Length: 117
Image: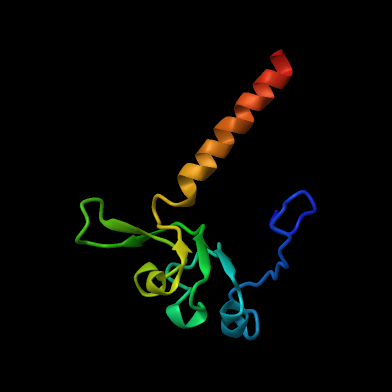
């Protein structure tokens, strides 16, 4: 979506995974990082340049005996270490989840209107 012709963002998109060579250097050059790899706190502060925008899509339950439920929810980004460097960063939980739900509701409504007029 970031690079499609229909999107005014007109971004150059580089797709990486956790074993991409030079991942740290690639991330350091990014203006926007979308982390979605399922590895809690994988993205560290030294991987993110100052002023970046970080969108954390990851959500993983991590054992935590100090929590009532016995676990904590962690994203793919080390939020505490990365957030001071960012212009914008999504929290986990409470970041992209509500936006995903809103988009799903909007698409469901539009499909209903299209089907039933």
